[in-house]
Length: 296
Image (tube, rainbow, N blue to C red; front, side):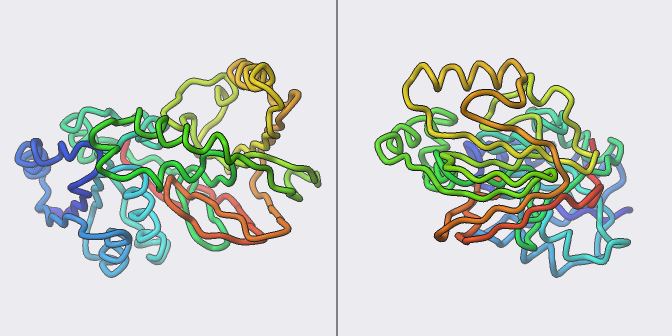
């Protein structure tokens, strides 16, 4: 039988994975895989466990949220390029943006079936100051909400937990003077939010027109720079124009590019795939073209 490593975050989402474990393992076995199961014990556990096992398995299957998948990809990216094992994904988090972009079912049993019977998709991965991430790097307004929201709140309230935590941030929103070099342009201004996105879903929102022609294997990502709205009407205008697919309108700019550089006057915190990604005065971000295979 082929060897499969199944790494799961048992607390992810509403911890529903425990209700499906026997059926998932049976799906693996019926499709010719002998599975080793590893429940993660702490942050970065998935990354460390996977990193140490290059060449040991034919397939890696991961269950958890976007953060768990981020750790798994980072672990696989430490392997020699010709030993990077394909990754199947069973989404069990609160948002599961990357799974939505890959069109992987939220139904755990369907996703398990896909993981062992689907086709490999060569997917772009991004890199932030040398650290791989899957689909989003961001600084500014509300970007700390995913990692500052407790797992208990996520499990109990689901997506509403993010909204409640975000509301606490409203009185403290600020801007960051930023110099951005992207797509042959140099843009310098004060921005409330900066985002680098390789996805068609963000914060649980899918099918925005601005992402209509985006793909995950074209060697490009979207860079979004949003200024602080002066009032609620301007905020509504920005959201409306984004939904309509306008790349450049009053209050924001969106540029598609293979790399971008951000420079700040002080250390600025970033989030990578919903987890804290560190603070820095300069961030160099680039696409790693078709770096990882996902089973879809």
